Length: 263
Image (cartoon, rainbow, N blue to C red; front, side, top):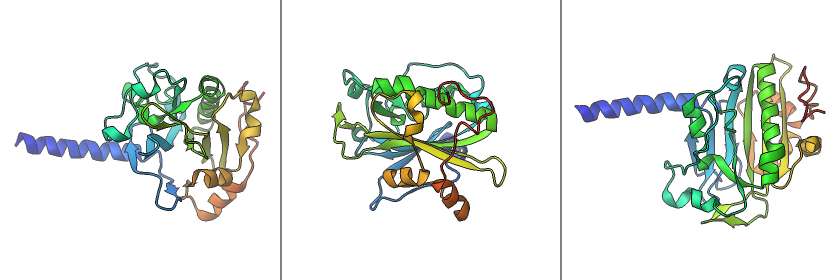
């Protein structure tokens, strides 16, 4: 009887967890690479992950952010940890990063995931990390993450997809954790019908100053082609095509200019 109750409770928890997770990719992310590059999807409270076991890396991480979710927060932790939901041979470990010279770079940022302790702690799984140059991770990348939080505060809701690209890059650290050549961030802001916005950035895994952000902006269509993915494909087809091709003045959507990204 106890076993049956435990199974039922686990099933209920799994269903609830999955429902909470899939708010983050509710507009869909389609793998367009022949044979597939996503080996498994991981469901977390604050984000969803499309994971590649060969690279030992997330290919994409999607998360929904709202004004309420990014205001306040429970603070950070430093407890990075291997993701035990992955097979041992497919997961990155703390040892892989030790002495590698690379940062453990968040895809779903901890400062965006700290709306409660569980979501914050899950953001420190290594399945949410890629090896990043310190001059990217600790500089421009963190300011770009903050800019997206400012957008969510101003526009109430936004959907973000961020991920890794391995263009001709076979560099690894530790036991086969691949180092991405580029990282991207794409954001969709629903707003009111007819005023939806989508834009993105493709940034090499090298030193990055947020003041240079404009030169890394790229139509979402081109980022999709590089990543082998189709972001937000469940949107109305005509709207999706329009937004993917448009070039947005991303500073003009902010009433109060973010001082680093838009100065």
